[in-house]
Image 1 (cartoon, one colour):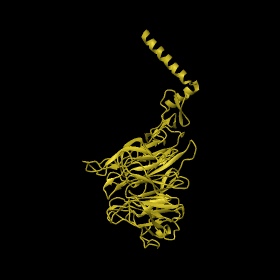
Image 2 (cartoon, helix red, strand yellow):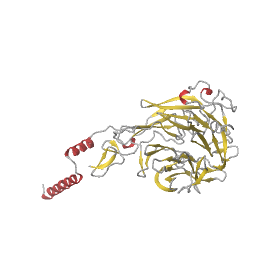
Image 3 (cartoon, one colour):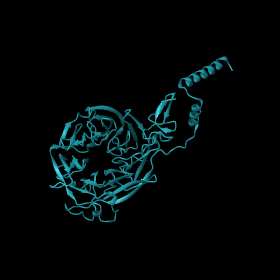
Image 4 (cartoon, helix red, strand yellow):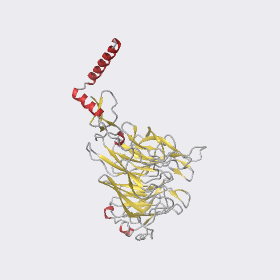
Length: 478
C-alpha cells in the first residue's frame, strides 16, 4: 500500500475520532446507534387500510370522540342519494360502520315521516344534549334546497336502520331560508347558520339564522343586523374571550356579484359581527379549509381552495397556505401543499392533517383529478411533512378525528377519511389513518403525526445533524 493511501486512512481515522470527541459519544451510545442503523425493517404498506362503507360524497360529518364519528347524507354513484347516516367506530384497530336512517319529510312540528329523505350538502352539528342537528341540503341534484332541520335524540339511544326514523329524530323545525353549501356552528348552546346557496333565488344566502333551545318564539330566528352573503366558505370556532364564543367566517363565493371572496369577519351572539378582519393574502378562494391551531393566540390555518383564472375555462386549485392571528389581526405565510380544493383537514394535537381534494382540471375531468396526498403541518416550526398516501384519490371527503391521544409516549390517534369522489367513481370504502404521537416507536416517518422519525421513534424532526439523536420526542445533542 502506498504512503498516500496510508496517509488518507490516517486522516480519515483522525477526522472520525475528532467528530466523535466533539459529540461526546460514550462507547455504549455509539454501539446502540450502530445497531439501530443496521437493523432490517420490513417494508410497510404505502397507503392506509380501507374498510367498506356506503358510497357518499358531499356529505356532512361530525366528530363524537371516544373513537366515534357520524357521517350523513351526500351523493353516491350516478343519481343515488343515500338517505342514511353511518356511525363510524374503531374496534380493535378496525373501522366499523353502523347504518341509521335520516329523518323523513315534515310536516313541521310533527314527527318525521317513516320514509327517510336524502340530503346533499347539509350540515351536521354536535349538540350539548348528546344528539346532533342536521340542517338544509337538498334531496337530489334536481330538487330545491331544504328549509328544514332536525335535532336528534342522544346518539347512544339510536336504533339502527330498518326502524322508523322518528325513533332517532325529534320533530322537524323550519328555517327562514332554504340553503345548501352553508355552515353551522355551535356557539355556547346555540347553533348559528351562515350563508349558503339558495336554488329558488339562484344566489347566495345572506340572513344569519340562530337556533336557540327553549325559545318561546320557536327554535329558529334571524339574527338582525348582520349578513353572510357567501357560499362554500369556512366557519372556524375560535378560542373564546371569557364566556363569549366566537366564530371566524372566511372566503367563499358570492353568487350575487359572481365574485370569489378573500374577506372575512368574526361573529359572536353578544356582539354580532365584532370586526371585519383584514383580507386574506394571495388569492380569493372557496372550497378551502380553515383549522384552529394550538398556539397561544389561537391562530387559524387556511389551506388551498379554488380560484377562477382569466383565460381558463375551469377554476384552478390553489397551493398556498396562510395563518391568521385573531389577537394581533395579522396574516403570515404558512408554506404550501400540492394545489388542492374540496379537500379536508383536521387538527391532531400540535399538527394539522390535510388530505385529499382535487387538483386542476384534466382531459378526463373538469372537476380536477382527485388527490391521494396527505400532509402534516407543524404550527410550532411552520413546516409541512408528507405522510402516507390515501389508497385512492378522494375529493369532497370528510376527514374526522375519532379519538384524542392520551398523554403518553405510546399514544396513537385514529382519523377516518370518509367517502369522497375518486376519478369517475364514488368509493364504497373509507380509510383509517392511524397517527403515532411523538416518542412512539416507529420505523416509518410517514405514520408519525409529525412526519418525522429518528432513532426508532416519532420525533419533532429528522435529527439529521452529525451529533444529534431523538431524545424521547425532540432532537438533542449526543
